[in-house]
Amino acid sequence: MNSMCPIVWVHLGSNSIPRYISVSLQNQKKLFPDLEFVLLVNQKLKDNLKIPGLKIVQVPSMDEDWLEIKESLGHDLSFRKEFWFNSLARFKAIFDYMKMENVEKVIHIESDVTILPNFPFRQLVEIQERLGYSIQGIGQGIASVFYVGSLGALQKFLEFCQEEVRRNQWSTDMTILYNFASLFPRSVEILPT
Image (cartoon, rainbow, N blue to C red; front, top):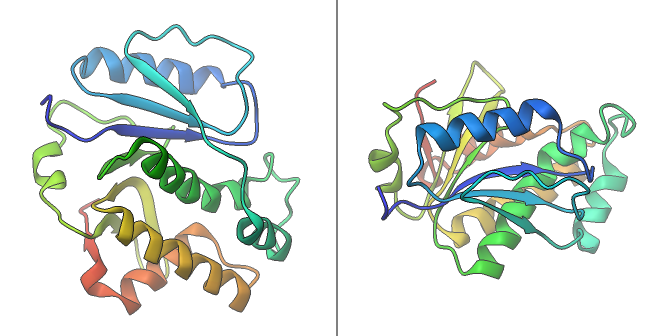
C-alpha cells in the first residue's frame, strides 16, 4: 500500500488534541503502519502526540474569503469551539495542505471514524479528478470519509462553499456536500455508507 495517497485528519480551533483523537490515531496507525498519516492543525500544538509515523502539518490561517464565510454564517460560533465554521474550514485546510506539499490526492477521515483493514483504499484512489463522499438521505452529504481526486476538484468545491454560504447563512458542510453532488454529479463519486 505504499503507493497510496496520504490519509488526512483535520483538527482546527485548538492547540490541544482531545484524547479520543490521539487514541484513534494511535489505533489507526497500528492497523495501517505502512500508510502515510497526516494531522492538519491551524495552531501550534502544546502537546507532542508521539505517534510514530504521524506527520503534523500546520496549515495557514484562513484568507479573507474564508473569514467572510465565518462572519456570514448564522450558526452560533460559540458552539463547540466554532464547530459549524470548522466543519467547512477543514476543506480549505486540506486544500492548503495539498498546495503546500504538492499532494495530488488525499483521503480525509473524520476524527471519530475508524477505518478497518478491509477498507477499499485501492478502489478509492482510482477515482480521478473528482471528489468522493457519501450521501445520507435527502439534503445531507457526509464527509466521514472524503476523497479528493485532484486539487482542481477541491477548488471547485471550495468556490461552491463560498457561494452557498453567501446564499444561505444556515448552510452546513452536510447541506453543501449534498447540494454540490446534486448540481455537479459528474464531479462527485457517491461512496457507500
